[in-house]
Image 1 (cartoon, rainbow, N blue to C red):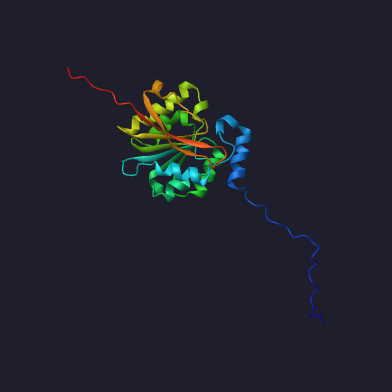
Image 2: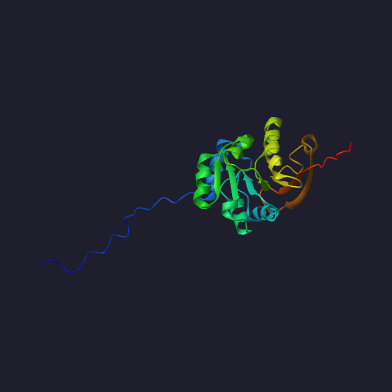
Length: 213
């Protein structure tokens, strides 16, 4: 006859634990260690920065909302929370692991894995001909001039008149030589309670006057 009493489990015996999935900061920081200049910041944008970026999206304008450098998705989620529909939002992210992370975190958002400096081809391949607003967390200040020009030309060709290119930076000054690209730029927000203090700049094409013959 078997004893009806079972031995109590040994509390000293360690139980196997499931490895915790890396958080956004850990995931982002790991990629930053591999390519500091390519990633830019060592930590993802905080909620205040992400919300400030999202407020600059001109929802009433027609076209796609384009995010450049989605990272772990802090700005992406803020854009969705601000009312941007997932099917209207397109994100270009260079790092394949971060692109996969974005697809899992933000289902329904179109995530393009590629180099933003190749935006003309990437957008054309996706059939994107019109942009409502561009929001960028890229370290664009450190891009070569040729890369900056290629990216800006691809975006402004689709933004139309008065379309805005919104750029995040820690540079304390314009990260772009705006006049060189035929742009007018202004700092529209500064967030001190962030590591590091962050500015948001907005750029638009300078209107050219057409002289009647």
